[in-house]
Image (cartoon, rainbow, N blue to C red; front, top):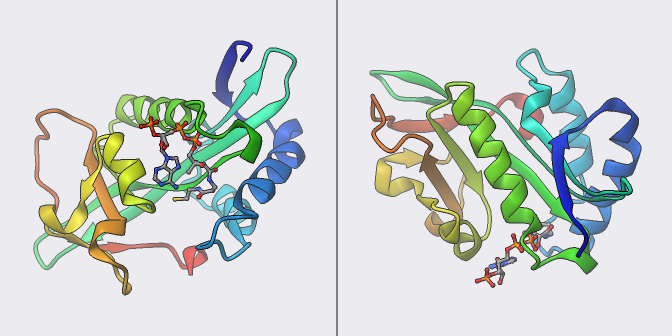
Length: 177
Ligand SMILES: CC(C)(COP(=O)(O)OP(=O)(O)OC[C@H]1O[C@@H](n2cnc3c(N)ncnc32)[C@H](O)[C@@H]1OP(=O)(O)O)[C@@H](O)C(=O)NCCC(=O)NCCS
């Protein structure tokens, strides 16, 4: 494959990114077909940070993948902490299994770390995210606010030595419903 560029999305790429997201999720059994609507709602949210929305493209500008992170909180009786949710992640079917998803996620994690975020929560394929350093969230006493198989709800600390341990139930903004 030609060189892959990972960069912050710009508004002129929104339409192309939409097609990539829609095509990527076409064959995904767990898809509700509304991933692109979620992206639009996150973009309109008060805490949206464009640095946390990235596309993977070829040198000629063809978009092959898209990923984003956005703020959620993890709450318990004792504490409330802001972390990031990774969602959605999309790679065009014909370009999957070439490391593009991994490159997108690692770019976002680096940006998140640079922005001072402590951790990332993700709902998805456990085998895939385990390879990227995510662990079953309940092992950290972090829980989903809905019914989900334990192994599909995962968390990763972005810092090797986090200054605080986060525990509680994840609270998603309304637009995730
Ligand atoms: C999931 C997705 C983003 C992964 O992107 P990708 O570019 O294909 O993945 P990468 O090339 O970075 O990673 C490939 C590795 O992950 C594994 N992998 C890919 N998809 C997987 C899946 N659904 N379950 C388990 N492992 C998976 C591959 O076997 C490969 O493993 P290896 O490195 O040991 O060979 C992509 O397949 C996709 O867009 N799928 C449809 C939409 C979707 O499901 N999004 C994620 C929602 S959680």
